[in-house]
Image (tube, rainbow, N blue to C red):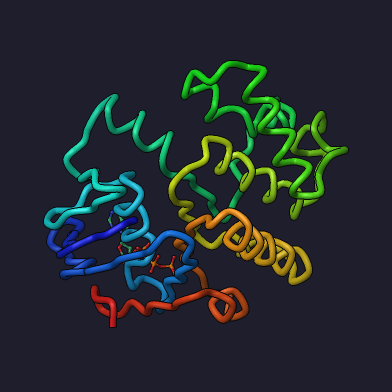
Length: 216
Ligand SMILES: Nc1ncnc2c1ncn2[C@@H]1O[C@H](COP(=O)(O)OP(=O)(O)OP(=O)(O)O)[C@@H](O)[C@H]1O
């Protein structure tokens, strides 16, 4: 599903990734762990085409995404890759429903269809009653689940998450982790997750460790 080969990346003269090979299959949850500064977020950004490698290739569903640029890349990314970050980055002036729909509107999905899918996700996530709430009217755990729904609205092939539970208390973190598991079990949703959370690493299908610019 996603395959990265020979990924190298330096910032200035400082090599961060020194030849990383990484693969994830559909329906797999892979956690990337490692010390602070090991290059985990840098790798995730490259896997998600938010950043380009100096060397190496990233292939998603047979498309070499490191070779795409401009509008082609933006359209491909919006359709195929969902992102969840440590901070939810919901737009404060929009409701939960509107926030979830944003990637669908960017993909030019019609409003009715996007809102139908958003309502389905809200129901699935136990957030039915929250559709019209603004982010500041939601709890931290609810905000992050809305961010996950936003990541899923276009049915992406893969969800990339960078410390998704890093800002949550343990009960909300646990609820989020269970949500990932149920999305994998019920929809074969694929996840690559950078995390320092040991519980999340433990319930993943596979854990890879980064050290000194390599996966060890
Ligand atoms: N845009 C950038 N310009 C220069 N250096 C950068 C840039 N982004 C990251 N770095 C450096 O690259 C190294 C790896 O950063 P990265 O964020 O990938 O690490 P990480 O393993 O995700 O760490 P953490 O667990 O603390 O989030 C760090 O030394 C960081 O300072």
